[in-house]
Image (cartoon, rainbow, N blue to C red):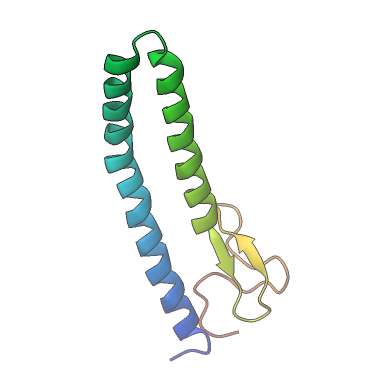
Length: 103
């Protein structure tokens, strides 16, 4: 077992959980937004389009905030918080790679 094994295992569990939550936001949130917009359109009538646009904007903001928050990584060596991306696969401060067990 490596020096940072426990930290990276917790990171992977958190990543899987965040991925499932993002999928739920898409799978449940988008149809729910459409259903609410449809119901509001039936009740309100003339103001349906602005309400629908507002609901979609709120849904996109929630999804974007969750995805940005879930991309954060805490380095186990120096405790730097950085965003994981395709181009950022190691800590910008100390150079420890994501999921690297030994220094």
